[in-house]
Image (cartoon, rainbow, N blue to C red; front, top):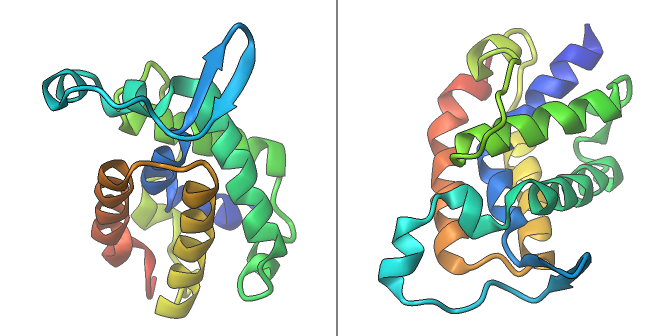
Length: 163
């Protein structure tokens, strides 16, 4: 049961974590970090967020970094002590991929259902967001994508905090 709840907590930031994929480009099988290429606004608006962020490989890289940040965060890491980390990462990647317009399908619980009985506090929620922002910054996510994704997380707060 604790593993399922831990998955739910990390999935709560799934939408936001999507932004962390930005900044990784694949060229000849080698990842290039350092931000997205600058393109005219009209071209950028035509692409899905999933495409603008670099697709599934980029999302996987950021999720891996983000989960590492959470594991090292003494404020919240105890909530994930019994989590199935490979399953957690897979579900989080799927959620982010689907939420940003990618081809994946998230099959986990709703955020409301996943957090029932967890008693997530504002402080715990904020700590998780800070860990995500750290990953977004590591991968040099663009300000517009970061803002869009952090806004999405903020809208999920009522389904997560205080349940």
